[in-house]
Image (cartoon, rainbow, N blue to C red; front, top):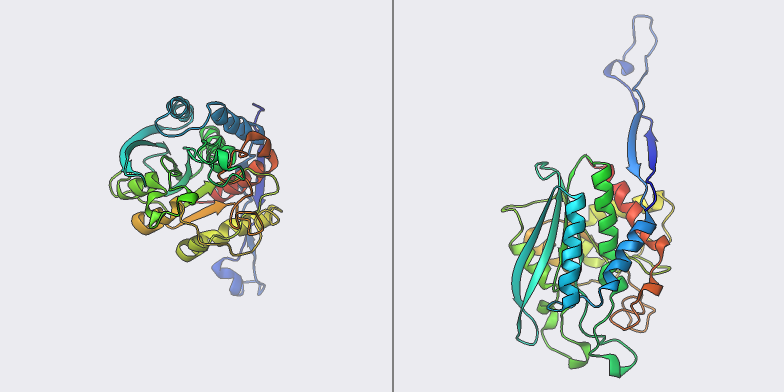
Length: 334
């Protein structure tokens, strides 16, 4: 991995002291300039994030219960132990749509755990066991590689964790990787009442966080954040529960020149992990997720839940955009 350089954002603060509005003894108004304040924001390393995405995909489909899932969990735990202050594996059980009780593991890494001012970052690390939106029906029960739908968000968060280790932000950060997110009923079953069977790890964590009474200032969920020419619309529930932070993220992206990736356009309501964090845990949370109303599925990225969700679809530029926006948001928090 390349050596990380620092971007220094220099903020000039012009403050008028109380005496500024009053005449001095000489009869002239005085202006006082404070010394220059510097905020050091790391540069997001897209090569590093891409490596983290690729490494996950190389394990194969990370379907809960599989050897690939177990091997990837061990690797993720090891990487977070390198970077974070504490790592906790939250074991849980949840019933999937087919009536089977399955085991899941939420992976939680914390930075500055004693800092009461906290930010929550999230993604899901499991992969879907069904390619139920594949154009080839023969692939509908094939597990997917999930390079974008899962691994991309985790890859970005791993690189953020590496940056937090090198350059400590002023706030505490918790990274939660949810399991059993993507075992919802296959679309071809036309399963009624299937909404409750998605995001099972997030549902469990929202009811049982790693720390009793856990709270965070806000949360950001990453889902499908690595595809080429991605567009991240303002997800509906995010605006309903965390509108201030939606605007903060999109303003930050615009200031960095990334408004083509983060257009000022409202998207669809998505029953993603953030919905349960908002509703149950009460933490205002934003879902950064690629939506595409012009795709063949009408809502998401073209290769969503297909066998074509592979590494050749991942863009270092998109990873860089998302990661840099988050770094700027986090390192300017106090």
